[in-house]
Image: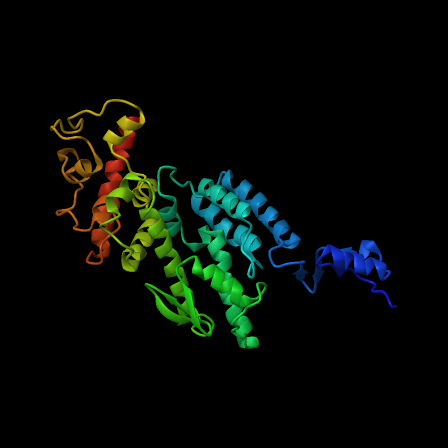
Length: 350
């Protein structure tokens, strides 16, 4: 028998014993081997050593960036260009390890100076899909499958292999509300039907929208004061979200805090400090509790920057996510007012 000069990949212990009995050197039998840049592993759920190594390198860079004395925008740019390509590249047919996703999320919050009192789902929406390593790897998987389909047609199977494109895409997209209908056509409650291999950039846009919609639903289901207030009153609006994302990018620290729900009233800070909440507003001395609604829309102390009318949308009046009817200037004025209220509340606390 002519024995191989390289290494062999074993899929089971029994296979290893068979190879050894056939005369193969045990040193040449590996659980994982790399062939032409591809990792061959025993089963699809095994974590690839190469992907784990790339994740370790990316996390090391991210850890340095999170505490690097440079501006927030520089850190975010380096995160997108240096960290995410390392962490997510090649994680197309199996999800990233959960512990890696958790570590990336925690370090990114430090890197982007995320407000700890804000809603994580809202912050992730506003930071963009690059802030979610798990979703970004799925997004790249869809792109890679579209390129592969152009090169060689990918077949739809009734019983797909767990190591193939069909299983990976259907499993990943199902987390954001997509259900398979027929040959590569998936259905979403808000985004409708699409052929994920043929519609190109339009599919990627719909996939990102379904991700935002899922995160917004996660925000509404959180055990938060604002989530409880808004749960029965608002739903995801892609136009409002688009404007809010633009405002988030151009705003300062207080504006971003308002948009993610980290702007709190004087009354809430009394509760946090376990102090009795006064029955009058310390800003205007009216017999009103100094809650967020009073400070933003009724307190005379903040009348100088207040818009002429209170928006009908609860999401706008509470968190400055503008309704569709608002112009860019009106949306900026609304956020500027709420950010000014938050700034003065924080100054008095300090």
